[in-house]
Length: 432
Image 1 (cartoon, rainbow, N blue to C red):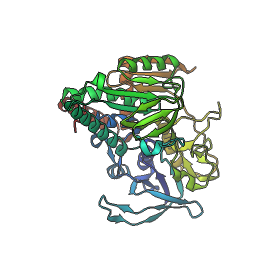
Image 2 (cartoon, rainbow, N blue to C red; image 1 turned 30 degrees about the vertical axis):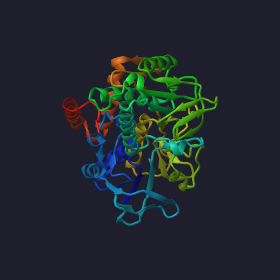
Image 3 (tube, helix red, strand yellow; image 1 turned 60 degrees about the vertical axis):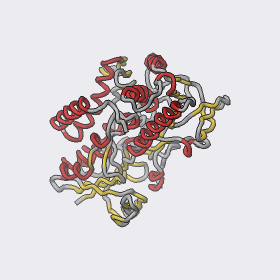
Image 4 (cartoon, helix red, strand yellow; image 1 turned 120 degrees about the horizontal axis):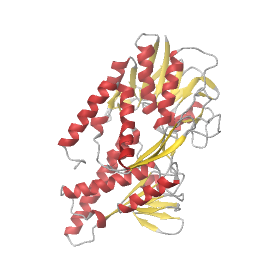
């Protein structure tokens, strides 16, 4: 029986394992194995809502073991440390409990075909102090750390204000892409909600300062310039300071300094200025780009080893038509997972078909009440700009589409209803 190993259970990896498990895993035509260092999956585009306290990750996460049992694949909990392409084996590190006790020893796993879907991590671009003094949004743990730090900063500043001292919280977000913009907008809603519930006594408009620093000349460079300007106006109306054409020189524990010599005071610095593939991709000893992303052919096979595939943020797929690399987006990972699920289920070697990406557009949330984006459709790929409630509704449907790909329509609808009821019975953000 052929063994197909998938490294990484992100949006692309988990969907690929689910589809292959349903098609060839259940019928025992192939052994499908998913390996991830975390026991649960959370849709990464929603990490900013965890950081702001809007979503409880335990309610929206997917247990890998449960998904594996329901869809005919095997899940192995552990972190891949090394890949030996000569013997077609991967080494999985020992798994330890929270108290440090070893639960599982180091293991080796043989594969016939290997799929790398390990996602991406934050790229600090070598900026002094950025890695040491900045928080990131690479995982649920990172998002929860930011939320706790933000809540603690608000409570501490509120306590200082009671003693007559100046009470303020300064949040600096480096990077004006989707992650930075979405987090800033959600934080405005969070700080106002916390004030309503008397968690702190700060004035949200005066005492909490949120600043976005973007190196480019506008926010959201992936969107139409009109939408970028609209988003910037909306954020400024919320009280968020937008600093474009500003390059960070160094990061300190309490401030971010730009190349113009301006010091931006910061109680919490969130780095969202770019991503790169994890160092694990280098262990393959295959061609990578400057962001450590694995170079792949049109069939998503790695350049140099047809038995190894890569998809999603850790891969570098250059469109053969226009010669541009696909961006690190969940939409790309989803389409590549669907493509590979069909290709690998055939269990055929030789020349494989080429992947064809279709861009359906992009949407960015601006908090609980607004969003902006562009939809691309039709034979000529015409763009349609959307905003307001329509964009907000379409944005929420993206997550529902991901859930439906994993669980089917009925379960997706049931979960959506359950989450809606829960939202009506609980505070709009986590209060502790």
